[in-house]
Image (tube, rainbow, N blue to C red; front, side, top):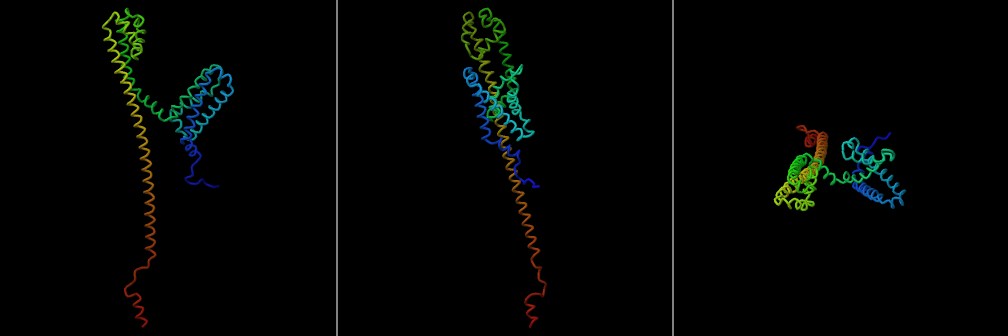
Length: 296
């Protein structure tokens, strides 16, 4: 029985080469975009009724192709496939389409639109942004907590000051919270301010101070935390790439040193062999001249 040739790529290596190829990633992106277009066209009732068999066939084809993609990735990656959270996300999104569209599970079929979100897991740049957002959650939690405290305190204060003047905006705590959230987004805040300042001319101090603290300070802190996390994610990715490059260079240098060591060993063996094949040194009194005198 013939043994496998040393260094010949295995079937899993070939599958990994296909999965890592640029054309494979681009094909998956095109399929996701086409699936998104198909799901969007299904929202038109007249078009869906006229082409319903084609839409259902396209849905089956997309699900089959996505399932085959995940199976190929799972075979190529092996156990490492389940260590990546994005792969779990892909399996969940694709697996929803396999749920029977009957009974109480029919609602889950509506979630098949989430397959469009697979673009996030397929495109590396989008993955970096989402990873940066998750990295920024601890820092954003502190800033958002400060924002909530500021909004809640301002809402209680505004309800005490302006509830009688503008009950439609500050009649109770819930209404006041919603109004101040709208003011924080700078949406229609002049209408709110005018309704209050008609009887409280000095109310501009409250609104200006609130907007400066919330819209221009705290929200910018949130943006700063996100930008910092994104920068850290990009730097971490570059560091991983640098480490991989250094590892490849180190392995190349080690391989060259090993080859050089083997060549030096071969040269030593050749020199030792040639030294053994040379005739031994002549003894004193022996040589061609002594032979000539003897014959005479």
